[in-house]
Image 1 (spheres, rainbow, N blue to C red):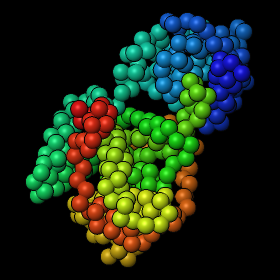
Image 2: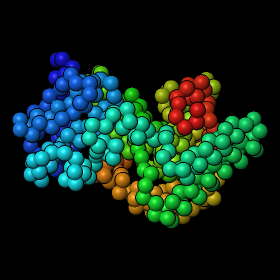
Image 3: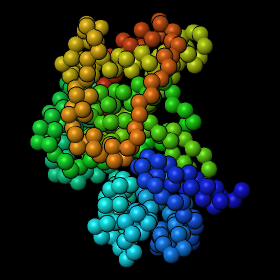
Image 4: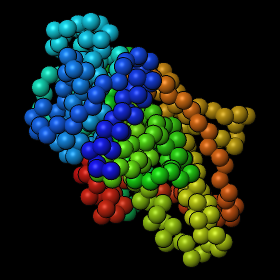
Length: 368
């Protein structure tokens, strides 16, 4: 089947899902892929045709295509729900955008797509206070790469304390602006258990909410698992850096120690990964002033979880993007206890810093 037909089939699925997620009752239109390189999308009310350009689909991430799709669906809401026939991007259109969760940069008319992507780049903080925080944390994480173990540990601890104080202050002031999201495409069909543990660490200690989802790739007609980070502009790029740092660090440490661990290779590796992450989380817990969970009478919320729960504007931002979000519990993993316990001890020595490998340094973003 030609790719263009597959794209139309996927757009129909995405359209139905958007209607379901946002509880909007619309009659599906006729989808058309155009060859325009200037008009990314259009809603032709007289013929009930929703157009998206081939250029848009081929040259930009699918999440951008979805925002343009929502933009045109908002026009459909105006004509078929609000019965506003004159078109345009007035109050009714913005009301429809709110209804469908269209992000702010994609609510404008005729905007240059490069400008829209620029505004949705979470590596670029638009507030002066946010830029100052990122600059200070960047310097601290650079110090955390020091060969002096005491200096490195102290720099990492100060970075965590700085981020915590900043977020507490923002919540206290009930600051509404400056929320963003970032999608990490894993390229995998399923998420490994250790990836879910990394997501929990990001939520608990780096002040972002994490949503595991899927994303369509129009080039291959395949769907892969994604990790979406949602939070304040100054938190999301730090959490993204931590995600890639931990992924690289786990692989590096396993490559150095795999010959010492017997048994089924995948189970041994998973045991080692989970142990490393447990040790790293314990280190973060101690640095944040919390007792180890084994010394407590029951589960205690982490500082990050407490701040996220109090940030009602962030919760509103998340609800707009994922109106039917639900929690799913994963299965417990089989582990080798000796391998796990050894890795826990190693994990307590991991220090988050600028880069682990050349690949990490080349990844771009906050810490280049």
